[in-house]
Amino acid sequence: MVVKSLWADIQEYGAESGLIVTISSLSPGAEKVCTARNYPIPQANRETLKQWVNVMRTPYKGVFTAE
Image (cartoon, rainbow, N blue to C red; front, side, top):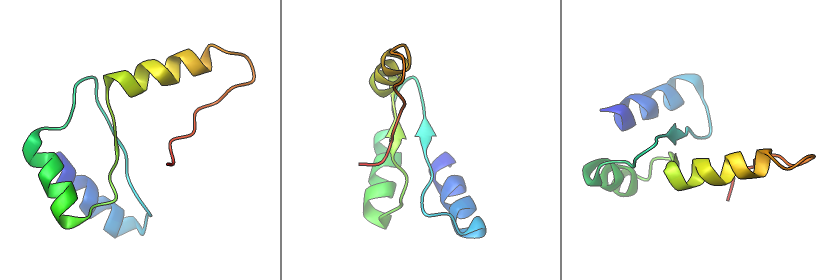
């Protein structure tokens, strides 16, 4: 439900993509929906968050999510 709602908001506001941030991960069903429908919705899971926090602890470093 979250994936479909976020996709609807992306469409409504003309955004290029959205981002789901979670301390766990998307359900297998949600990942299948994103893949099958080619939704521009990457996810940041627990490991990604840990990496971001470690980078932000370093002076003059930032976080860039695009791949």
